[in-house]
Length: 457
Image 1: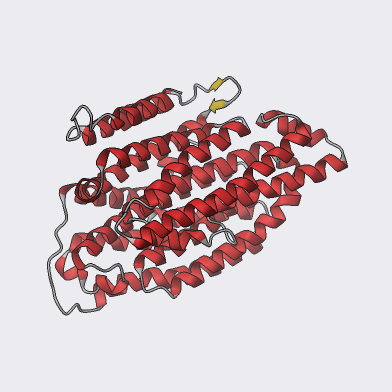
Image 2: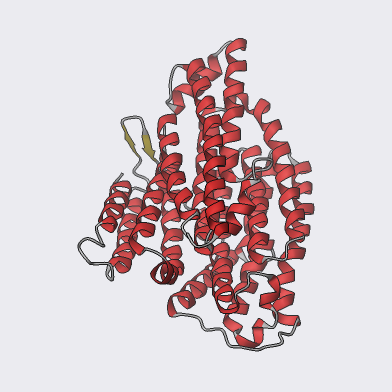
């Protein structure tokens, strides 16, 4: 709970930065605040706390809160220059901090009311951020499209919550589980309808097909820094909430809703990977790649078991680290060359070996190639499916992953084996260099020692 209080207070303080003229000290203040929030979150490990039966800060919530704060810390380092040079610092930093409050609520709710509030606190902030580049028509379109589609998905979510409440008479997760387990046949049919509506609403937040259609356009149109935030923090919080809800409430009807999710996972894997192959823009390719990775993470929910939570934790964290690295390099290169196409990376190894090496590690991790962390991310996800005798889904995922290898290697080939006509050195700022060094080291470190993460869940 202290984490929520600190983040909320930090967001409010940020809003007053312009009035009291401490804008220059805002960035270090935020980094210190995130560090303090991380300390208090980690302090609650093995000391679960329940507040008014609405919030449950158990180890699951604590670990995911810590992961989200680490990702947010790296994100602020990556995004600092963009906000100082092109946008209002205080407004955007405040929105990000308030969205982090929503993310923490999403990973720690024990009541459907808090789930809804967490999603809305997170989403409304990101709607505004997606349209934050006012001079860019694509950014305005991205924000408007995200808002309309998000509002539509929220309707499904609320309708599903209403039906679940009608069957069980409660918003509490444990009570819902018990009531569904004891209910009669007619009540189960109504509960199943509510579960499917909740599945639609959460699938939109996680960009699972066929509810993924907003993601490529919004990811491409939004500023690169905001796209990075959506692909990392937002996706991590969404899947943490997804698993928390379905593993706590709807296990008695597992056989009914898992068939629907199975086909959604298959569709997501192939739509994301096959469509990414055709993209010339690296940013749009990473957007479709994000859709595909949502499919891999959802395998752990379809194959729900004892190891699913740790598999989701490992995958979302390692994927987020690699994504921050890839988007940071895209941000640097696109500013330097004015293009987000893969062709802008041609011959980059000769003008900036650091960027090339960091991008290579990120692409290998996203593709699931050892010894990077992405390999073990996919390994643990596939292992959960095998343990549940879901080998057919693993075979589908492996085939989809092979398709993914192709378009990730296109970037590596462009950097190392193609020549650029004009060789101009690319300058990398100290903060960006620090972010890339940290993310690259972590990607390799967690690939060699995956238990550094798994031991906490």
